[in-house]
Image (cartoon, rainbow, N blue to C red):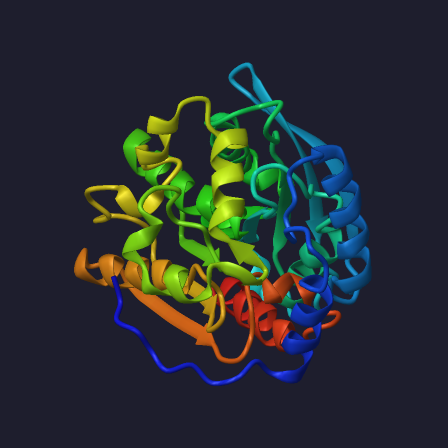
Length: 325
C-alpha cells in the first residue's frame, strides 16, 4: 500500500530527539516492565509537552451514564470579549491521549488539553480511559463511547453545543478516536461534527502492506514492528481481535457516513501510509477530508511541541478547526 516515496531529511529538533531516544539498546517503547514505562513516559511528557496556556478552570469529572462511568478532566477556556460566537454553546472537544493503550494518562497530557482549550476556545474533555494490560480491548473504546454519550447528554450543563462535538486523539488515541466514530455510526448516536486522528495507529493487522512500515519501522524512528507485536499481546485478549474494526479501524468495510475529518501525520512516522490510506478511503466514501503530512518530523510530534516546535503548528491547526465549528 502506497508506493515508495523519496523522503527528505529530519528537521533539526526532530533529529536531535531521535538521536537521544534511540541511543541505547532498548526499544523506545520497552514493555518488559509496564510500570517502569509509565513512570518514564510521564517524566518525558513533563519535559517535552507544550507550554501550559491559561484557561478559565478545570475539573476532575466522572462521566457517568447508563450505569457506566469513566474518569475525565474537563477544561473551560478563558472568557472572550465577543460572546456572540458562543451564545449557543462552545464546541466540545473529546481528547484521547496516546501511549500504546498501555501508558500515558489524562494527567500526562494536561498541557496538550490546556493548549487546545485556550487556542480552540472550546471545552475539552480529556478522557482518562482504562489502560492495558489490566483492561484489555475493547475497554478503552467502551470508555470513549461512555464519555461521548455523557458529553452529548450534558453538553448544556458544560456550556457546550451538542451539534459541535469533535473527537481527537494521537497515536493509540487516534485509534480510539476513529473507532469511536464507527461506534457512533453503528448506534446512530451521538452526532460527531469532526474527527481528528493525529499520527493515528489505524491497524494492528497487516502492517506489511504499508511501505512506510517497511522503510521506517525498524525502531530508528521511535516506533518498531516489534513494539506493535508487544502492543498486540498486551492490548488484545486473542490475536484474531486485531481484525476487529474497533481495534483496527482501517479494516472497517464501509466508512460512508463518518464525520468530516482532519487527518494529520508526519513524514517519518511508520504510520504515515496508514493515515494517507484512511484519508483516501474517507474521500472515496464521500466524507470531507483535510489531510496534512508534516515534513521532516516523527510520530506524535504534536504532543512534543516543547522540544519540537513544529508541533505547535499542528496543535494550532487542530484548535483553529475546532474553533470554526
